[in-house]
Image 1 (spheres, rainbow, N blue to C red):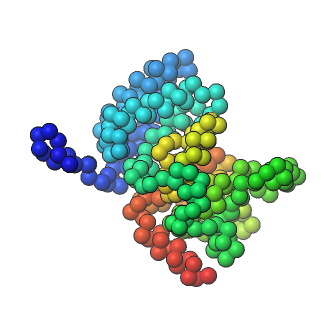
Image 2: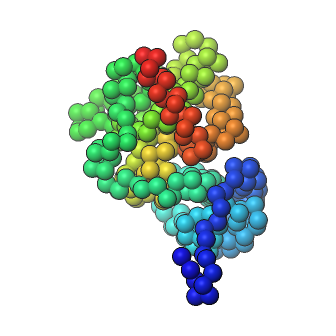
Image 3: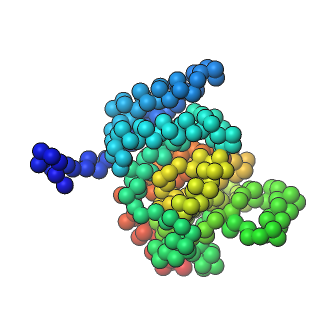
Length: 302
C-alpha cells in the first residue's frame, strides 16, 4: 500500500518478547501512581495522568503495535477508564486494578487482535479448530477441573445446593459457557496442572478452569454485568483462559501456582494477569508450535 507521496506504508515489525518486561514494569509504576492519588481526585485527572504516561517509550513501544495505532489505542484505553468510573457494577475491586488489567491485556491484543474472533455462539459451537473438553475428560486426558455452566433452573439449583451443603468441596463458579478450547491452551493448562500437583501435598485439589473460549456476544454480555471484560479479547480468538485463584488459595499457602505461572511468563510462553480471584492466561503465538506438539503427545500417551 502506498501513501500520497508514493512511499510504502508498512506495519511496524513484530514486537519482540524482550520489550514485554519493560512494559509490565511501566504498567506497575503507572498503577502505583494512580493508587497514590487521593480518592477525591476527579476521574478526568486520572485520565489525563494515564494519557500522559502512555506516551512514555516503555508503554508506547507496545501500544504502537495495536491495529488502531498509538493515538487510537490511547483514545480507546481512556474511554474504557471513563466507562469504568461510571459503572455501578464492576468486577475489578478498584480503578488501579482495572487499569492494570486493561493495560496488561494489551499484550494479548498485540498478539491476537489480527486473529478472526468467534463472533456468535454458533461460531464457537461449529468450529473445527476447537477440541471438546468433555471428550478429553472422558478419555482421561485433562489434568485440570472445570464445570459446565448449568442450563435451566434445575441445574442452577443443583449447583447452589451442592455449594451450600459442601462449600469446601469446590469453588463456587458460574461454569464454562463453552466447554471447548484450542489444543494449545489445553496443553499448557495440563502442563501447569501437572507441575502444580507434583509440587503440592497429596490430596490438594487440582486447579480449576473458570473460562476458556468466549464469543464476542458473550464478552459484551459480561461487560454489561460489570465484569472487566476487555475488547478485543484473546478469549474470543480462543487463545486465553482463566484459572480460579480465590477459593484454591487456602490449599496453596506458598503460592506455588503463581510461581509456576510467572515462570512460564518469564520464559515467554504466556501473558499472565492477576485479576483478583482468577489468573488470566494468554498463549504467546511463538509458543504455539511447542504446545501443539505437547497436546499431540498427551493424546498419544493415552
